[in-house]
Amino acid sequence: MPTYRDQGVVLRTIKLGEADRIITILTAHHGKIRAVAHGVRRAKSRFGSRLEPFMWDDLLIAQGRHDLDTISQAVVISPYASLIVGTYEAYLSASVIVETVDKMITDLRQTGISQRQQYTLVIGALAALAEGKHSPQMIENSYVLRALSLAGWTPRLDSCVVCGRRDQVEYFSTEAGGAMCLTHRLPRSHKASGQTFSQLGLLLAGDWESLDQQDLSPQVREIVEEWSQYYLEKPIHSLRLIHS
Image (cartoon, rainbow, N blue to C red; front, top):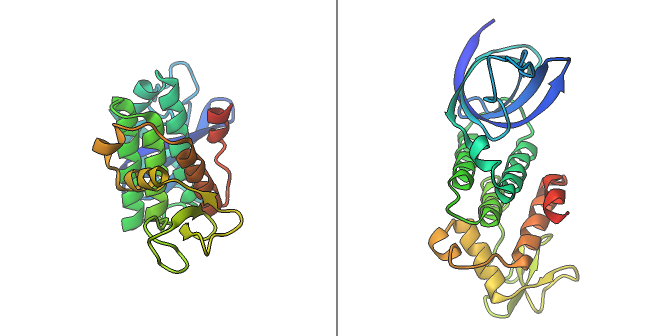
């Protein structure tokens, strides 16, 4: 059975049999993969906690059939999980981040520049949560907007998506793709303030110098959540924990 080595971040795990787990991993060079970790649920497992969600590992993997590989070795690059789970807000935001990328990348072993960029973005977001230098909610919302932008879903924020005018841009429509003027607004569009459009732009740009001086607008959170679920066409279940 051929093997390959790669780095990857653990997105989620599911139980398999009495002692194993299937691990979903976003890798640097092989895209998203699913791999079995034999015996990982045993108390004396050789993997320890290295294959928990949010962990960033160097992996030796045996390529299997039917898109299910086997993990032979895992060495921790950075223990993001142990740093993130100590803060509940950071844990919730990390859960949203990994669920978002898991649902966005639907094809296994799909590689390319876009996949590499998504991998780099996830690592950066988890590292920021682990360091605790910025608000977890800011990191989460910035990540979601930037990840969806990489996938081709970038909201227009500076002019109306219908006519292009830059004045009277007072509404935001997820369905239409961004900002709307008073004349062309849709019935289900949001009345949005200048602060809302400004924060959405800062989150999309990752401008932390400016973001760290602000509180995240509730309307921005609402728009980012609606934007992600509309274009992913799937609910982000981790958001239920944030709203509970």
